[in-house]
Length: 193
Image (cartoon, rainbow, N blue to C red; front, side, top):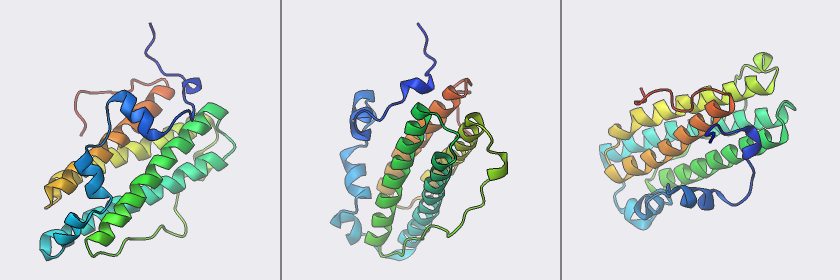
């Protein structure tokens, strides 16, 4: 039995929710409600802790917007074969969902969400093959994992920390799947640093 996932294994069948429910990785109801910007969250706004949380959320939002742009670059590159292109668009959709939820949460906390940059500096000249694009995406996903890992303990609101940890899990899955598609060990160590 082979556990190596091949690019042909990635299709756009079903929704992200159905994929996550099949894998047992659905966000908790509290995390979804919190990130969706429920009124209980709005009632907690104000104070230094909330301001710091908004700054953390805006940093995460900026990274999500960069990921959306990066996956768009990969999708438009003409270098991705159909199953890998579908995977890239699926992951881009995840980042769009993250960005939308983060922006709504920032607004509920009384903050102003950052906007996408007009232009991102990506290593376009080094993207010459599907492998190059996959490696670039894997590097970005690893960076996202590290960023969320560093941010989770900084939240003043522990429910926000829990919700950010749920996004961290999604980013880690992206990184593992991309590494696997590159023929690398999907989870290279027992701990993420």
